[in-house]
Image 1 (cartoon, protein in one colour):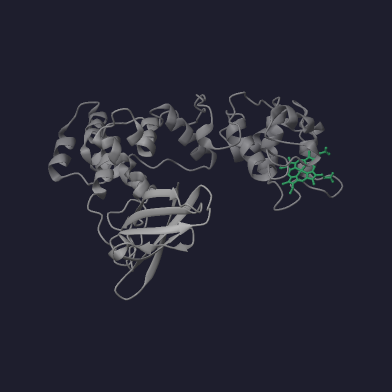
Image 2: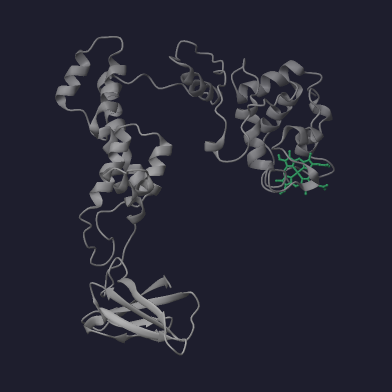
Length: 379
Ligand code: HEC
């Protein structure tokens, strides 16, 4: 039918799918169909019939560029002998089939720059041409073209521009999390310079509140808290130092690699600053249970002596400090003997345990609740 009425068919898909003057775009219109409807069976993980639509060369087995009528992809999408692709879920819509047809008839362009499937953040940065739009008066910059092309495709008119005080309120909340003060509103409304808005954005980006607002997202991911988060919910009086480090990192525009390095290994840097050590507070941001005599750190256990007895057994002596009273120490499962009160010093004699001994110091609270804090020490 499209051979007889090419113009009608062309107009039909264009009106439903995209502005009349923009041909289907692979990344915008075609790849999402493959990704949503075909990849599970013909994609990176699975290739039924050896067919995959995440790779140009492989996909061309089912595509005749320039000739959708002889392309197996279209045949299967519209049904062959009662079989349809995809075989499960709803059929492709008429719009989707029309887009695929039009794309194939235009030679099935598949730019090298098209995103490879996978995590968005690993995709190469592209600089796509802004799409053509009907209402050329509306866009102010290239990004607006992308927004408007989608709106026009769905026959939605853009909203009218917001007035200046609304805009000020929005951008202030967005960048600093705070509404503008009455004085700030007055200043902005009185600023008639053509770049008044850009100056406003620069001022907000320079504000210390910018870091406070945007650090919150990272602090949430890091599970930041200034108390233990459980039961007695004891305070962590120094937690703010890590929080302040994150806020400062945002305000200083710290590059992401440095941001990551300092949090994971700030203490391992050459001559680390106190702040770089504080960055490793990242590792301490987790719910901690200190109930029933459990300290947030296990009782610190040090082996003070390890040696062989005359009959070849291993003698391990150590000391243990804990906030709760230590009532019992096991060394590789053997009861250690207390040398003084509270197991501050103890000794165990073991048949050969190999190179590592597991020391478990048991702390006990007044009610007799016991919590083990296993601790591996190598001798
Ligand atoms: C749930 C799994 C599944 C999904 C999703 C799926 N397919 Fe298939 N596809 C198959 C199976 C199974 C066959 C083999 C059918 C047969 O030979 O009877 C097949 C065969 C095909 C063939 C024929 C290959 C040949 O060599 O004969 C084409 C073309 C095709 N699929 C295209 C698509 C397209 C395009 C999509 C997405 C719009 C899609 N498929 C989605 C399972 C799937």
